[in-house]
Amino acid sequence: MTLMIHNTLTNRKEKFVPIVPDEVKMYVCGVTVYDDIHMGHARSIIVFDTVSRYLRYLGYKVTFVTNFTDVDDKIINRANERGIAPLDLSAAYIEKYFRDIESLGVRRADIYPQASTSMPYIIQMVKDIVDRGYGYTAPDGSVYFRVRKMADYGRLSHRTIKDLRSSGRLDENPDKEDPLDFAVWKGVKPGEVAWDSPWGKGRPGWHIECSAMIRHYLGDVIDIHGGGNDLIFPHHENEIMQTEAVTGGPLAHYWMHNGMLETKTADGQTAKMSKSLKNFFKVEDVAKKFDKYTIRFYFLNTHYSSPLAYGEDNMAEAQNALKRLWNNYRDLQACARDGPLGDCPVAPLLEKTRTAFNDAMDDDFNTRAAIESLFGLARETNRLMGERTMTRDGALETLDFLKDIDSVLGILPDDAGRDSDDLAAVMSILIDLRKELRVRKQYDLADLIRNRLGEAGYVLEDAADGAKWKKA
Image 1: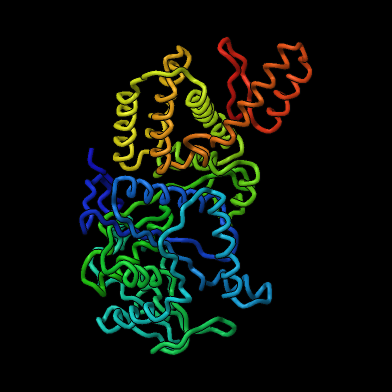
Image 2 (image 1 turned 90 degrees about the horizontal axis):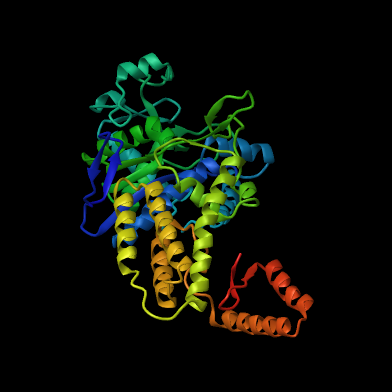
């Protein structure tokens, strides 16, 4: 198959054709750093981490950019509450962000621009907007974007201006020429962090930073723009307007949006996880109860665009399902070390699995179907091991295959592949010692070895052809 991506802009799946062959430029909206990230943030972070992994797996050279909004009303208010400088607050949460995504097994993006360090690019883009007649200055030094000057406003969210008016989302600000207009630059207010600009001291509006960062780091047009579907309107809609006003061309060829993580609010209603509704669970707290593999499996076992219910019961179900893959993986490790010698032609099975995996991922990154292909492989290899027809070479080949596939998903343990020779040698000595103790009928000492290994996370299994061991 060819990689197909559901494009929010056209509302259909489209064949992925990069602007430059074999290269992908991808931008994903990041977080506003005024607090710790929660599991709702984690979903988007893991989804687009997996997208970038798969693109690299396919052989593309990927430049992946995701930003930090470190200049914002929420940051200023939180900093004032704590009596510290806003940029000091945001810097602390950026540092915490990287610790949290590490606990999710997320690979870092290539570039993490910040609003505070991107002011020259932001101010230049605002200036370009004004110079082209799409922006105007208000008495307080703010700069607003003329929405009606652009054609097809609402094309990404599939709304019309009439829809926007009836929704009651318009800001009746007397400084605006039209209630639809939005700020690309905000004039300074007392107690706020501010930068010099041609329009006086101020700070950027929320939407302009992403347009400016994309233009500076990736160019006028990119391949993929992503984020949560709560950003479609107004954030991504306004990004399109800003960029097209300056460049005259599209901002991105493909728009991808993940569905929301949902949980119960205090009044028992189901809603998207958010700090404002106080129905959120911090990544830091969840990571204390569930490992990164379980968290990734939980998110990836549902299509990225679908809503997903969160709760500890859901996480426990994911953990139990993942254990089936892990048990198979551990058994393959044991077989690779202690299994029968000889040929085991697993290549056709692995090729069948790779085809199923690739077909699933090519179908709009369908990680759920991709994971099901691994469960199918586990069933087949369990049967071969049960029949004692899986050999050491076959198990090693399967483990190498799983390591390659897991470079995309990140749900198998970091020791994917072969156990270290040193560990295998030590375990062989302990197994021989336990065998000798049993011959001498010193069963209490033999059981002590088995029990202590169990406490350390290793399982000894007695079989007709000798003891086997694996990680628990």
